[in-house]
Image 1 (cartoon, rainbow, N blue to C red):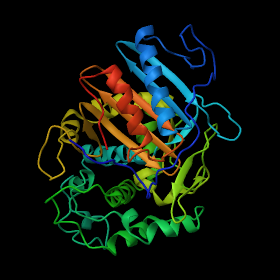
Image 2 (image 1 turned 135 degrees about the vertical axis):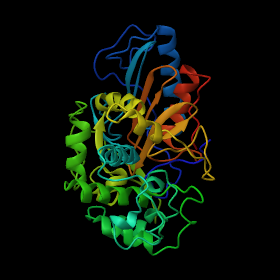
Image 3 (image 1 turned 60 degrees about the horizontal axis):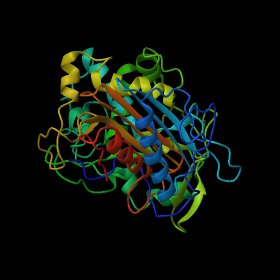
Image 4 (image 1 turned 180 degrees about the vertical axis):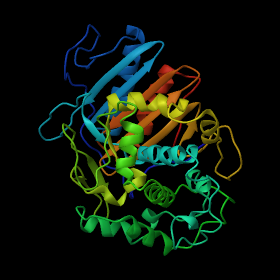
Length: 390
């Protein structure tokens, strides 16, 4: 099983934010709590009430300002907005907000690579040296190993000089080559293929591969070949600090003074192919099942994508595949950037999708807000498939 979180992440320090109260943002239903938003909830009232209670309890305990939760499956839909989008104005969270989706971006970048592989324009076992110069050990590191986090390359966000550089100027624009410089100044974690290490560096390299092979920018390729064909008009790949509205204020805690701050308008170009995208609940409802069922890929390519490895790098039924994970049967990815977290997963056994968006990345007792909410929701919804990622 996965025993670590998988975000684009800075050092996250425990802090408390506003209480996770439910706020009416559209219309109310006849539930026992009229303050809970339910614009499209068709689940049985008993299940809905338990889910409401679970989400509100976690938000209160963990100090999560606002959250959006969507569930779609044979048992009905559950779409809710909880809490506030801004702790000062107390403006309510709403289900149509845009959100930064962090490492869920990796699922799009890797899908782009797999689409090109399906077309015969690259091979998953090609060495990265054939596409990007200057990668340490690049002759031995394959595109498949990069997508499955088995390259051994260090994570550029773990370089002790990286976070202070970003914090000193959150509006600064970064080029992919700058991220690679931070990564390659550190020694490799292991020989290619000999283990597993979640590294954002891997996906940055894959983004460069997509651009070289396709002749398009990564954002354009994703838009033309992934989001547009699926009808995901609210999903974008910003190249600067652009953040479509409406959106919630994003709360984070960062060094060196470990105080709460807002990261809403930060330039996340430093996360690029590994975490820079923006989307909505509506679009992620489309993406969660499309990713897992392989809507855009050949059957053979999707089968390769779903081949998982465990943390030792050995084959396993539940761990990390090509740009996606399997947690207790829930397949997909999470995401975390300063101020925002996302969980977007699909349970094939139940044909059920789950999407959670929060406007904070501040950990509570060592656990991330998105993980806490997903665990609480799945405990009520699918007790035999509880999302446990820590």
